[in-house]
Length: 367
Picture 1 (cartoon, rainbow, N blue to C red):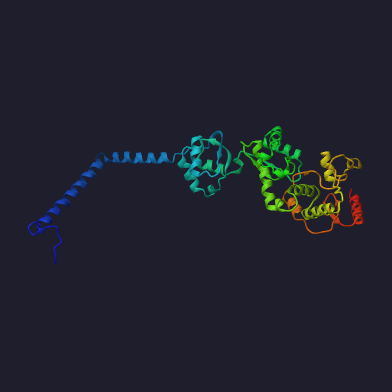
Picture 2: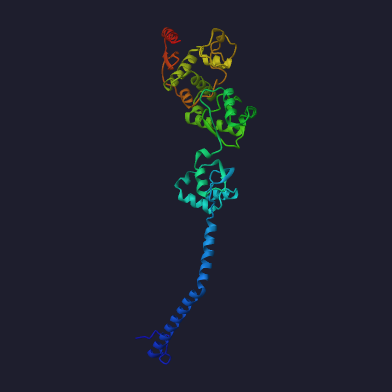
């Protein structure tokens, strides 16, 4: 059998010598252990305490946090795509939280932190990290206005509402619209923004300008125009927006939008004047429920009692339902409609002039 040991026979120590050597080593280890124990008892504890204190101090610094509740106020911005760590660094730099680690630890412990939204927020200085995170997740902490533009507003009404709700002056919006095409107004609008400031609810952060907000409205129109097919039909898209604005002004219930659009198309096909009170109101910049005979004689290209065909432009900002109706109205032979009950908005449609006259009598009975 081959000997793989590194010892030769002459060098191999005897078992007795090896046993004595192990015994001496064991005694030495015991003595060393006793010395260490005595050292600890005589003052080594102070050394251990000092080292432990330094470690604890280091850990405390990495998770340093303010006790709260905070003081003063400060506005901060969370940017789209910003990581939680980046938000923590921003808050630390602005004096909101004591450390980045405290904020990221609070975020890790809160599953809702994944829903943190970009925007401007009103916080306090020297907040507890968990409280700062809670405030960022609370929509009421967001510093921004909201502007709701209902369907059917005229351009002048839209601009006044934008100015009153956004804090941006009316003059700034009027100035912005002088460069409307550059801000996103479609080329087929031929520079006329009426009908293209899309009705919706918009958030207005503190740094928003008139140009920026107008651009948002035009982009909203472009998105809905694409989804409804406004730019994919044989009829010019500008005419479709004009028709949609008429539908928006005349229809009272969702079920009526398509029928009103069909009446427009049927009258245009037969060369009949549209005779819509809404176009007279637009010419007068009024909102009359009942127009007078004097009103019907108003000299304006928007007066569809005096002029056949479509008015020269939209009369309001139509919403998605009206645009959909203009693009794809239902089949039908209707030429007339009357809202027979102004309180409920009940509207009746017919192809018969005699029935139309009966509908007008029904309306008179509700007035």
